[in-house]
Amino acid sequence: MDHPTTEPIQRDILRLSACQILFHDRVPDSAAVNEGVNLTRVLGMEGVSGFLNAVLRNLVRSKDEIPWPKREDDLREYLHIMGSMPLWLIDKLTSVYGEELAEQIIMHRGLSHEMVLRPNMMKFTDKEFETLLNGKAWTWKPGLAPHAYLVGGATEIAMDNDYRAGNFSIQGQSSILASEAVQVKPGMRVLDACAAPGGKSCYMSEMMQNTGRIYAWELHEKRALLLESAQRRLKLENLRISIRDAAEPKPDFDGMMDVVLLDAPCSGLGVLTEKPDLKYRLQEADIAPIVESQKRLLNTLCNYVRPGGTLVYSTCSILPEENVEQVKAFLVEHPDFTIAELPASYPESIRALSSPYGLQLFAHRDGVEGFFIARLRKARA
Image 1 (cartoon, rainbow, N blue to C red):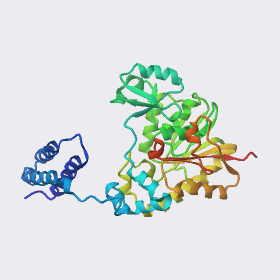
Image 2 (image 1 turned 45 degrees about the vertical axis):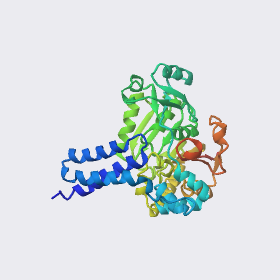
Image 3 (image 1 turned 180 degrees about the vertical axis):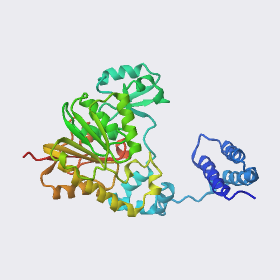
Image 4 (image 1 turned 120 degrees about the vertical axis):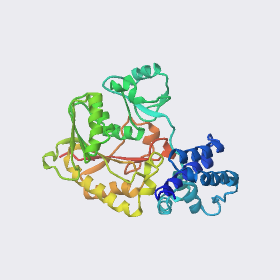
């Protein structure tokens, strides 16, 4: 008799093999079947290898007869199955964006597989970094975000001598755009309130040429270790890392920061192609508590901005209640803040997408991670 734990393992092997047979064109059907059967033997489950072999071979024979849902018959069911999306989320996106845009969001199959690198701005200009890239066995092209380069052919990047020497970093383009929205200058006092894994803190530290002070707060100790590792690699002396709940008031910071960046905890629905498990873990009931947490963070952190200073709010979400509606509500409660324009360093094509309450980016439309960015300026005293 099989051990009780073998049944879920069998299901997982079947799922993996079926995925290869149905969706991976570069994997021959026979190879997918053989690998599934071999995996049962490797795991000491030879007694079920014949069963799995029969099931998978039957799938190969009958896969062209599977009655997949048709878009024209029932769009909701089509998106549910073909987009692998929970029904509640389909309904939510459709109610917000309409059927056409919701379908584009759901059926988007991800960004390019190129890695996004950017130079260490304390060491390289963009032109100098391009010379460095030309010396690698990689392909590259400029990205959409400032200082971003889309690099192909780079493997085991953590072992690259230039990476280890702190000559460049890996950072998503939307994260770079959020960092650039802060518009730091040398000598500033800056707070990055939810800082891990640290890309934005490091970007700002480099732009400030290791002057001034960046306070990087992170709630979770393990994630703070990522920040500390980046700080050591890049030799960032103006970065101060603390394990701290940013929602808890710190009165001695009131009115002391030139800039506060809040890349808030969110639903993550803008990066589903990079983190597909989110759509299975996230529940509709989770959204309201997330929105409330963002509001609490905004109401706390805005107190630290000096008169004339800037608060940048960003999320990797595409839901209006986390983004535009959150900013609208904040401005009503805090009339001393107003929306500020996006920086001139943004590409004009991106600046043109901005609304009166911030910039919403979509992966399927803009070729970067789904992200929201709003710049808020505090009135001078």
